[in-house]
Image: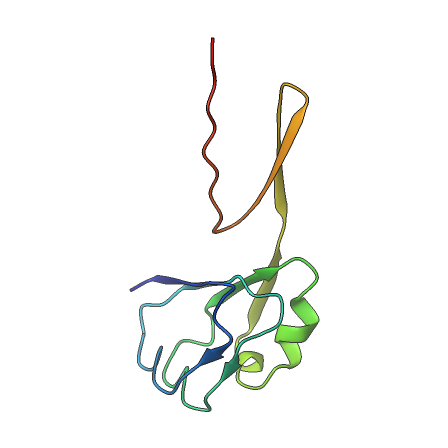
Length: 102
């Protein structure tokens, strides 16, 4: 496994969930508040993993127990799409179905 998406509904990460995932390069953590983690959740996981977090959440993850071990935490932005005077904002990990009539 090279990447993982942690949905915004996850509030707790148990022991050994990512333990030993030596191929992991990217984590998308979609919850604004960092999920609480067991001290062994990220054992033997590369510290160079890039952790993407929601905009405005960097500081919370940077100081959170066990997340602080990652060297590269980055905030995700939003993507704005304009269609016939209507806007859609999508964050990384979200999807939207568009329907057009001609």
